[in-house]
Length: 293
Image (cartoon, rainbow, N blue to C red):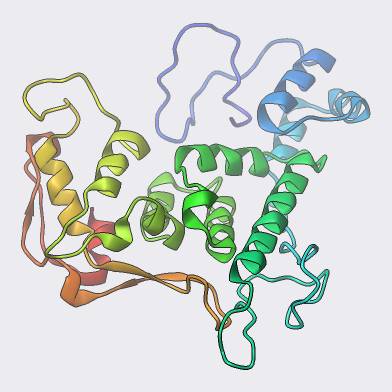
């Protein structure tokens, strides 16, 4: 959505990349159209906010929706009072889990569940905040596109980093976001990218990358050929993505979780893609090979 992208015609539109020449909205700009716009781009506006926006021009409201705003404060500890390193009301982000005198993790489950509860409350609070900006709607949109689940990730810091990546890139370049998500620690765990290694390739993320996250699956054109990609392309993509691991899960040390490239576990052969990708090959490029893909 941009100043020039709203149109009243029901006919399909095929804009150029970036949508530079879309037909401008020329309908009546009033309370009803403002309310519709806010329902689509935010999580709701008050009656007064809708009336105020109706007194502005469409361009002014669009500028407001896309205004660059500060990132939200970090979630804080509010349910687990017995962690001296994280008092109530203080952020737990990138703080290691508390250990006892023997260096073991006491009540790991309780600590982590407290952080997960804090993360959920923080995220819901951001959705309920009456801020007339499209960023939170787009953050949720990407969360539903590049899906992960906290029940599988089981690490609040890892999940926070993933949500933050979506928020920071919610209105940016799609290809750049795909690159960041591909080596995001939460995604590496969720779709088994951290188990994808030289002698035991795991195709889970490679398949989702092609079928759901990017080009999509077309009609079956032949054995193992889905019009947009083939089974051989899934195999080749999985080889490209071998060698990534996750560090920082349930860590006792401070610092954010991260994906790291382990070179000996990477497939260094030439990866051959099908005619669906113009028979492209990808050669060994170490830790940057995922970006080539």
